[in-house]
Length: 348
Image (tube, rainbow, N blue to C red):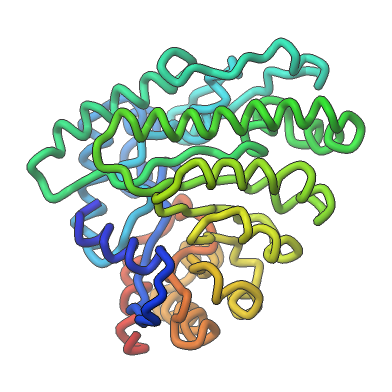
């Protein structure tokens, strides 16, 4: 992203004691579910042709100058990077992100797993090498890589074990499940640090974990909270963004204690309710429905919903206007434009 865009995001995201009110900004999480189709290329071309990947990421920066794309110049292969490092089979398709096949057929097999080495295992070395070359090619331009990302510890565990199986293990085999989560937590920290180490200007991290919202408050405190807190506390001085587009309304009070600055959450939760509960403690990144409004709606409907988000957060206090989740396939350019137009209409 451009330095000016990063500084705008950082000024909003980091806590301040000055009481200064910031103008509402627009930020979107974008990756391979949206970008290839938007650019009219296949997913395989996006993943395997560096020139096409670079063209896509540079284009959206120029096409939407008022939008801050998170994490920005993201080298990712759908959800496959972290699971691949544990040995999961990855199935590739021409026009969709890859599928991941669990590698643990029984939770007892967790004893055979080893924590991956980001410089050697799975797709991780490919990502690191690409990042090194991207940063070199961007040197001297107005573009910078300021944020890196990782799937969260429960999300990785689910890809290793399977969604239903993981949730059953959590109740039936809690100790083995904790060993799995401990391993994936270490992996998240090492993976983020490896990306930071191979780049020179990183100032922020993004952790994406939708599985947290499927836990009860009690299970969250036992199987998620300490691990998320360990991850965020490992990156002092960084801008920390948490993405979770499952229903986390029952967890908000505890979740914000894990140490992030910005929360991107599901559009199914009313942003006004979230603001009342935690809006004075973190910045909220949302909350326009990514499918029903940003894909299926027209620009006027997008603007109307976006204005409601601003109004429900008392004029955009603690708000980064965004989708209630990541940008999904089929989102048209004019609906992204409508987000920034909504801010102008409200004078915030």
